Image (cartoon, rainbow over all chains, first blue to last red; front, side, top):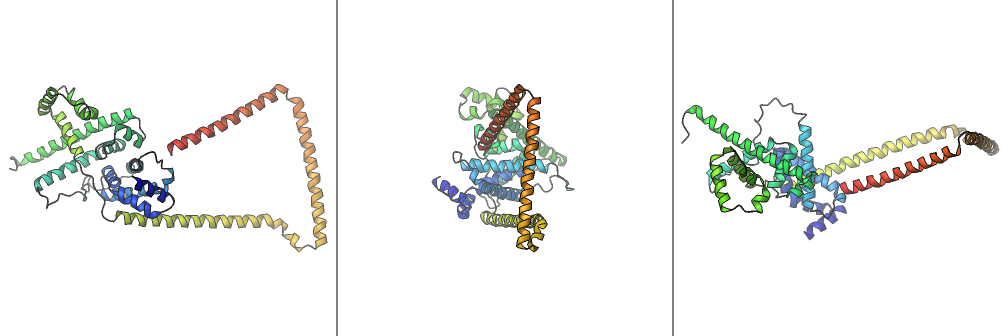
Length: 201
Length: 180
């Protein structure tokens, strides 16, 4: 923690090496947040880089009373929300929806100790990512901060600049929506198998 | 099917984490989950969300960031250089435009120059005196036309507006500090 404060102070004075250490330390949480928000590794990489750039440019405005991680994730979350809102108006793709939805970042590991479990885990992750994609941008950010970063409702409210009651209602609504999407997907999978008349095993 | 209170138990983090359910409630919840697809999906979604992995970026993220930072800096430097260049050009043009009427003075002899200077100074003095006389006449006419209480009211209004202005500055500054 003391190292972190020292790096922030040095980075504020223009020391790139100190900021590079902060980037090394927080690259995974920031990238993961962007990936969960945007659903594509390339966009996530770009958003994570842009978030760090914005953090670097606004480092003098960082309040040391707040945890640096919260401040950084707040920048990343807001950037992704803005990007998703802008993206909503500029989709002109002729591709069939969902054709390029697979995330190459998260493939099942064929060398895993339990490959079957690994495949199930991969399918679950794909389902979760698909369910997140269906949520409103702010709801999605609230769910990600809650489940991946263990943020309390107060912390989510501070990060997303919402009231605590708004966070509660958004989380409530989003979790129900995720459950419904997963349930629908499970039903669809079952229906897909019926034309062949018998189960695979 | 009635999902209460099971749905609340599943959705409420405080209840899940802080207030442990009694063994009887847990049994009821298990029975309900076996029969209710919606609540079962909710529990499954909670479990899936909680067990999701945190994904790292592709190796070399820091290096790529450094490259991006350098690119950004060079763009900013180019922009700053272009800005200063434009400012210099405009300033030089403005200076030439301002100096243009005075260019004939450079071709005058010292005696012509001093004569011109004296005549210009006399002209300026006379102009200032004339303007002073016009302003004095205007104010004396205005003073006799507008009653005293209107003057007082105007000064109070201007003072109030000034106070409001300074208060708004103070308030805006506070908002910016908080948001920063």
